[in-house]
Amino acid sequence: MALLEARGVGKRFGAVVALSDGRLRVEAGEIHALLGANGCGKSTLCKTVAGAVAPDAGTIAIDAEPRHFRGPRDAERAGIALFYQELSLIPQLSVEANLGLGHEPRTRLGFVDRRSSRARARELIALFEGVAGPDLTPEALIADLTPDLRQIVEILKVLAREPRLLILDEATAALDGRQAERLFEILRRRKGEGVSTLMISHRLDEVFAVADRITVMRGGATVAELATAETDRNTVVRHMVGETKLRPAAGRRPPAAQAQAGLVVAQVSNPRLRDVSLRVAPGEIVGLGGLQGQGQSAFLQGLFGVLPFSSGAVTLAGEAFMPARPADAIRRGLAYVSGDRGRDAALSGRSIFENLIAAVLVREKRALVRRSVLVPRAAQHADSLRTKYASLSAAIGTLSGGNQQKVFIARWLATGPRVVLLDDPTKGIDLAAKADLLAIMRQLADAGASILIYSSEDAELLEWCDRVAVFNAGRIVAELAENTLDPFHLTRASYGEVA
Image (cartoon, rainbow, N blue to C red; front, side):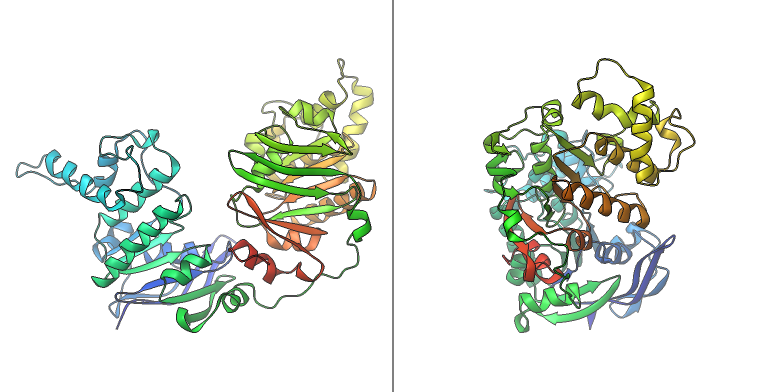
């Protein structure tokens, strides 16, 4: 009899269908992997099982008994505990306080039993003894801990509930190899005690090392259920991506064009990168692929001087180039478009016109703003992306999110850039604007610009780019072109297999 069985689970968020047919069966005392590309519905399915999201359709049964959880506490009482991908710790509290939050041991008079609480915290921390370091103590504040130690505390917080079903959503993302292996030892030990684990992981080596069975999701639905010992990585990846089609070669840059001197990056590193090398020829569009947070943005920010490189060398058209700040990069002809417009792009409270010309003023070192010259120029580039605005004098905050992003893209088009760095630029813009951006990218490339683009949507990279450099753990692990530029090879490299 299965400990957990979910059938036909559906969930919509407005017009977005997150789950259409989520199916999952987890046996008692097994480690089960739930796999799929970003946005396939894995996390939503886990949250419905854990009572954090109410399903719109389908059934969830525990020990063959249908259950309707009203919230996470309901699921906890049924023996289910979920590790959230977004950490749920309170930074201002100690490790001990976070581990016992809402479940503190009490004295006979109803007060928190500090002695028992401290002893329980030490007992849990001891599970990672030898791989966590001396800073992980019951008294330590969460705010003072490194990301890996915070992740360990989050794991311990879930283990403290002593669940029958432990759900781990990317629990090893911030852990080093020794810490991840210790977690797997704990899971195997719990498995021997009859505890089940449902794990989401983007690391196929982990899955094949520890999981008994695998469920694969694609497009909001379960598409395969596999015994790990009876399958292989290529089979799993093919289930994840479905039918793959090679992009037609028409429109790609020939190898001769790629050999020209343009942007050459050699062995660069910064806090999030290790020894990255890449060449981008004039007229070439190169994508940065891989799972989110693997160093793609850090690479673009390093080239733009936001997160300067600490080692390595960069040349632009044969001349040394190592920007220490964005102004240096702008004056050398680089443009940077961020998908996080609120943090990286918007001049809040200023007009649309001011937001459009900000980069031009730096690039051309203009001391005076001549509106008669700059207004037509700014309007031309804004209109090229079909930006909807009442007046260039209106505040940037009066625009929708998508139209704001178009303004920030137009800002850089006005500088006539030599190198364009696009950091997930299509967030919040519609399909028509995406098509316009692709056309403009090709126009810039045809004029001799070098284009580097990171997108969290694999389809954009496969459709738009001449080549794709795949990042994993701060390094480039594969370069895809021609016959390997397809969903299968991109997914396989992203998940740890060099294409």
